[in-house]
Length: 342
Ligand code: UT7
Image 1 (tube, protein in one colour):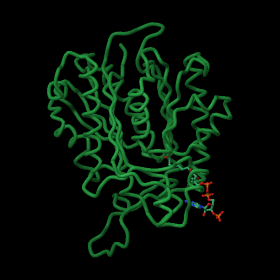
Image 2 (image 1 turned 120 degrees about the vertical axis):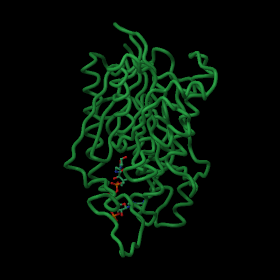
Image 3 (image 1 turned 120 degrees about the horizontal axis):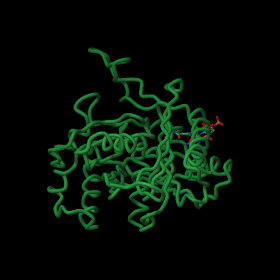
Image 4 (image 1 turned 90 degrees about the vertical axis):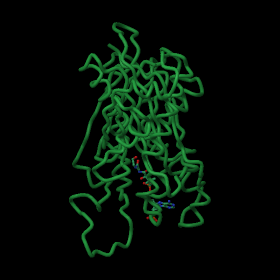
């Protein structure tokens, strides 16, 4: 059995906020942001847009690609949506806290009436976790065939716009992939070949939204000065990210018995171009091997890898047989990576 990504999609809000626009509101500069992160802009959702809206748009784009590509029998979006068995939605900025899941809202609006639906919280590693969970769900039930894995974020809603240490980093967006189970064995087989998933909860406080959950709920009568927002230990995450990204690349290569020359492209979580450059340098990997679009979209957490995959795919850079590695790290703390034969 193989789990193959048969189509990709993305949704990015049209409002583009360049570094210079941010520099008019807080004490920063285009030069500082570019030199410390590689970010040039971010896209910000309008006030009415929630996580499920971007997720739905990305999911529809993926389903449309599958139909237009002619790789499936179904001819309309409605027909195809009915064949989806599960929706896995990774996010840190769900429409609601706890319930309903954002995946259920997408399931309804997409008309995926035969699908189960669930959210996944693994911050920026969420999509990597989601792919492996999808492969597992396909493996354990013969009748399951198609799963949508979505990463969607409206990070602008949990950003403290007065904190220059974090607000320059984040952007909004969603990416989705449609995976399908096919027969496939032996050398050269396509699909998800291997995944590493890890966590280090001792770093939980390094990236945290303190208010609003069961640990620190808002209480009746309380005056709230500011909406819940993310707090980050930038240095701590940076060190963790470089270490875990480096290790995960090495472990994936070793486990598969291949070298970096066998990998066509590494699609890292787009958190900071310097993290990627440092990990690449430590392992002697040429910079061109990594696909980076952080300059345009900034850090979109769980959405960053599927957005990047869709961008590469639509450029025609993911050909059948290409070997793609994803690498991610983020809040939790979590980390991981997938090796995918496209
Ligand atoms: O998806 C995972 C989530 N997060 C991450 O991946 C973040 C990982 N960490 C990072 O990317 C980096 O740590 C940052 C980009 C957040 C910060 O870069 P840094 O080189 O670690 O800067 P720093 O926090 O050590 O700050 C250095 C200086 C400080 O000034 P002083 O104290 O040296 O005078 C900061 O106040 O830079 C200052 N600074 C800024 N200056 C201009 C911090 N943010 C800014 C800013 N503009 N936006």
